Amino acid sequence: MGLRVAGDGDVFFVAGDVAGGQHDDLELVNRFLAHLKGRNFARATRRAYAYDALNFLRFLAGQGVGLAQVRPSDLFDYLDWQIQPKRTAGSTVVRLSERRGAAPATQNRRIAAVRGLFEFAVITGVVVKSPVPAPRRTSGLRARRGMLGHIPARHSRPGGRLVRQQRLLPESLELAEIEAFLSDLASHRDRAMVLLMLLGGLRAAEVRGLLLAEVDVGRRQVRVVGKGSRERVVPVDRPFFAELAAYLRLERPADCATEQCFVVLRGPTAGQPLTEAGMRRIFRTHRARSGAARVRPHRLRHTYGTQLAAAGIDLLVLRDLMGHASPETTGKYVHLSAETLAAEYSAARRESPW
Image (cartoon, rainbow, N blue to C red; front, side):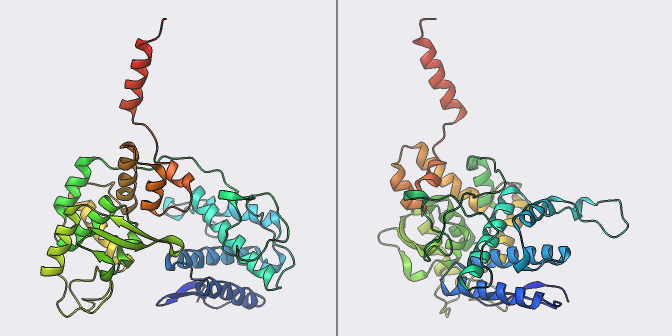
């Protein structure tokens, strides 16, 4: 059996049959993933890095190269490999479904995972020097804060993202799309989850992980543990709490002892926390039925941020509400609509002498 990512609850590791020196590489990867678990990295981050490490190991196996032999030039070959089509032996035809086609953001995330793996390899004495350029971070907002940021850097080197990414504005949703999607939802639970993203700006993982004890109905706010285990308190409007009350009264199993607020409602896993796959299924089903094809959890969150920024909220307040580590991320929400730009331009032209 080939390499694959396996999981045991909250633990992820790479498993499968390997040959020769790949045993040592596989052991190093799994030690690295265990290290991330020990440092309390988010489950979603560790899962993504496990798949990124698996992707890199598959590339190395095809090149006949072990981790200890990787050179900087191999990393650029790895980037090329991610966007090249897959070919079967003796074939000159590439099916569209067989294209790797990794997006620039995916490539950069994989390189970040490989960088972290080699930082770990250096610290543990497996290799002498990392072949991956380190991000250019000096002080302040761009200070060193990688996954091994608690370990002092011996040398600072230039580098960072190896693939240029487009600077895209956050995608928000139109009112008609949101109304169509909400109207199609069949349960109070699902409407409460969507409203929590739209009216509170929570990420999908934060909604799934929200504890019932952290919902303050009296103050109309929720306490959220977000990325990097950062806590924040978020006020949420009345429509969310109305749907939440109906969900708790009518839908959540009466004998449910699960700490998480949102649980499975039916079937053999009723009463257990809603899973990532379960939430994806909800969105996929109702996108298809409602015709609101653009509605996704992150776009609901982006709509929240964009509307607050357009209303003139202080950016430091918006940063805290959305749980951003950097003001640079929050700044992406400050953009003017085409109508506002046109109106401001017309007003300025009226005052112009020519």
